[in-house]
Amino acid sequence: MFAFGLSEQTHGADVYKTDMILTPSEHGWTATGEKYYIGNANVARMVSTFGKIDGSDEYVFFAADSHHDRYQLKKNVVNSQNYVANYALRDYPVTEADLLHRGIGAFHAALNTVNVCKYNLGWGAVGMCTHAMYEAVTHAANRYLYGTVVTDFSHVRRLLTDAYVRLVAMRLVCTRASDYMRSASAEDRRYLLYSPLTKAKVTSEGERVITALWDVIAAKGVEKDTFFETVAREIGLLPRLEGTVHINIGLLGKFMPNYLFAPDAALPLIGRRDDAADDSFLFAQGPTGGLGKVRFHNWRAPFDSYAHLPNVALLREQIDVLAEMLASATPDAAQQKDIDFAFGVGQLFALVPYAQLILEEAALSGLTGSCEPLIDEIFAVLVRDFNTYAVELHDKSATTDEQARFAMRMIRRPVNDPGRYEQVWKENVMPLNGAYAMRP
Image (cartoon, rainbow, N blue to C red; front, side, top):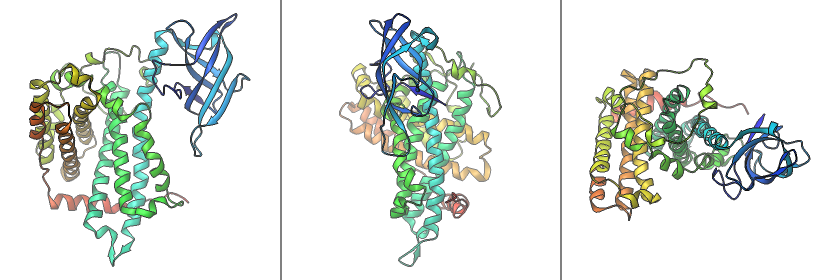
């Protein structure tokens, strides 16, 4: 077992800052400093530790031995069974043999490790929400209130259906993003968009799913013999680890111009990557810069494949207005530096690759024909989300009058089809009743 000692209490996961200092000594260096929020650091024998050589800008990663008498395990920083350590090194001896990376390579290793960690958080949200979904539907479908089965209440059906389609979308995005992660290379770095997208959007959607389910099951969600009780406590961590949602949505903005306006037809089409190959590139991703130069395939192609679905077509219209705004009412330098404004634009943009991955995975998974009502119901939710973000952008103080008019032009009313909704409810949501329960 290994541990990744990057974060610090003062700086979080800010790789530009570290108080772990290596001072030159007779046999190399001595390291002094503390790390915080470090999973496995109580049990891992070797702890990869990020620091800086004193008096220089040279970063290092070195392996610290948790059994060494200069390694102090101080405490668990969380109030739960999970052990997230605070450990300290006091004049810990470091030799050349202990160094994992030195110089700019250590800096790249820090960011590149986080690229993988971000992506994995999305699957954490998918797993937790999946278990919670089974519990919530089973509870609601077998409970009577005011002489009515809980699942017969219209608001409960809407909450459960929305939660279900959001969860399906989360799984489709994570599955498709995996193909780009595993197919990545120095020449194809599309994964650098899909990793923070998965972290920011899938984990945030997980929080929304749990909130909706909790509104259905109410007090059941805090009972100690449920899985839900754990999920309700833990789900909020995922959007706030490996950089906050704001940081990762901001990162997406670096890719926005090339993604929306400069598709590269020469990029290979990526198929299903579930083969047993060695994902060696993810362990040697190389330099981390040049994000604004990363190119993408045409995002419109999967939309064209599902253009016959009314809500897919509506979201495409909304995106076209967004692109028009960015081209003709382009945010100026001050707006681009305004994190609150940039976040508003970023939330709108994030829905574009999110939808693209959903549609690509839907085609690969064979979600056509009788499954298309489910896809259209997902996009009805995405259209509503786009409306919400458009209104938020309209109301921001930094938004110009012209941009505000564009924001209002983005709003569309989703196409509501009672037959489609009923099909998703009967064929997808209700069959979860009693279908799975964890062992007590």
